[in-house]
Image (cartoon, rainbow, N blue to C red; front, side, top):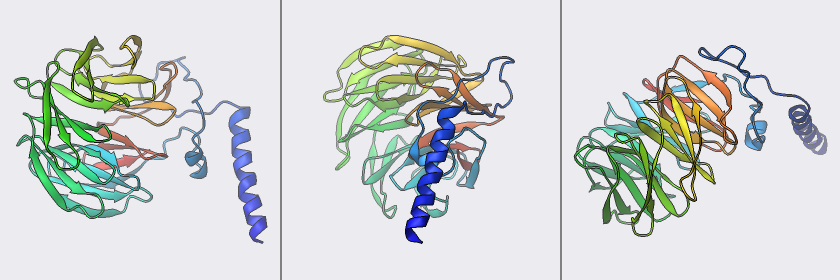
Length: 330
């Protein structure tokens, strides 16, 4: 009987894979899809999505209540963390089923969050600090001063990088993850907001100047400043290229990480805000749509709305995005 069940499961996976290879996938299109603009089929199949019977782009959203006005969201390998800007808290949910595992108080205006392999770091945008929480139990391990109006963060394998978005600051701060020691503050463009790490360098979106800055992670040296779309906020690395969500331009920009060459600017109607890579495709969240684009050429695969979205994160199988007082799992 055990062998029979195993064989049946294997057969079902083979059938699903065969189905994907034999025909194009159907796509759920929300409001705003241009007539006659038929999106292409998605790229490689994520085996985790196949295991979840979620190998096709459909609106299978599940939403979970969190705190007031959530923005930042990050994944710790098992759980989702949400920074509740209006609630001065972060919520920890089990990624498998969305069960709330805890709500932890942090300083005023929590906005962005990032996981460093053991701990979750949360910006306190009101007081200009970052709080370090132990991921296992949410214990506060320290609060560290950074610049004015800290927004999003990134982890480079050893250090935490924080974008200080105030127009009078225009810097990123580098903190040693082990103890929060300030290792330097580096000048970038006007009103930096998003931060991403490409394996060697830190990339920062400059909302006020429509550019991204590339810094060498080892010493913060500025390696280049590259024009993207108007008012870029979110930023993501797809393993080769950098993507930005251009809030003021209704678009996303794709740059080659090696040299900053712009490889394309693609329509993302509305006001795109956050962006994430799922291993094959780019997800863009904002107002009023959630969109999925092919990373290879920017073709739109999926558009859902109306929505009003904040931060985004990928857990290996699903994309999580904040909206109103909830976080959605897609």
